[in-house]
Length: 196
Image (cartoon, rainbow, N blue to C red):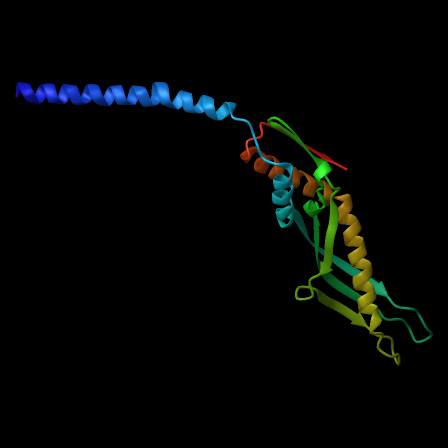
């Protein structure tokens, strides 16, 4: 029984000593060594990896708009169409356009200059777009271009509206957030993102 106590006491002392060495000596040393190592990521590697993120930096707005367009009036009346247009607008930063001179690395600091954000796509979702009303004047041939004209005009108005609502600003901010996270994971402590 006396021997069992000594074994238990010796084992507890050994465990305590092991934990002290692990948490008191080894972990602080490893943390210090990790924080003092320099970042050795070549600029070309950064550019290649940033360019591969191109599809991640997108903002998508889904817009519905009621559109009414009247055709050319004639003696017999005029045609008109009313649509519920469902459109998708996408904006992003073209990370494939990042050049070697756009990345400056100084120790643990990186400064990156991005291309300006732009609207990359704007289209009508035909599956969700509805024709609410289509009026044709009496004794007049059907104007097949009226609906297409209404779609084109509405799409351009939606594109302008999305720009005014800040879709490009939102795309730039999303690009900055993703690049800060990515470059931080490479070991950079200070990340500065600019635009051209």
